[in-house]
Image (tube, rainbow, N blue to C red; front, side, top):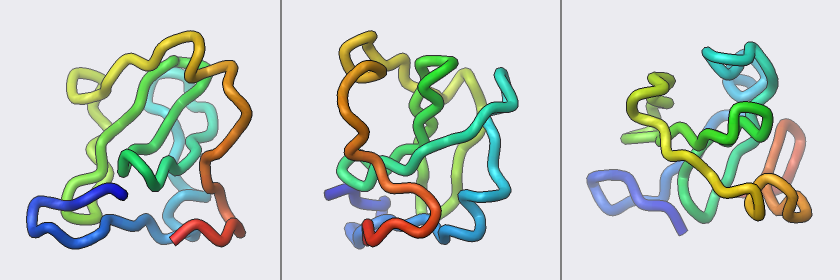
Length: 83
């Protein structure tokens, strides 16, 4: 479970997720509710979401491993029931 700075579970509005794209690749992002991150599999980066606000700066993103990129999608996307 991902927590914001206030200790509450962080969530991303599915409509917002449809509008967001990776700033480097312009490709789609997937929501990882366990870590509270928006993941760009192409760029191998995970952008944090703090207090419900996506931080879309490559300098703030975490590099994800090849194993994370190749693992079966457990990530929520638009229309998923991940809450």
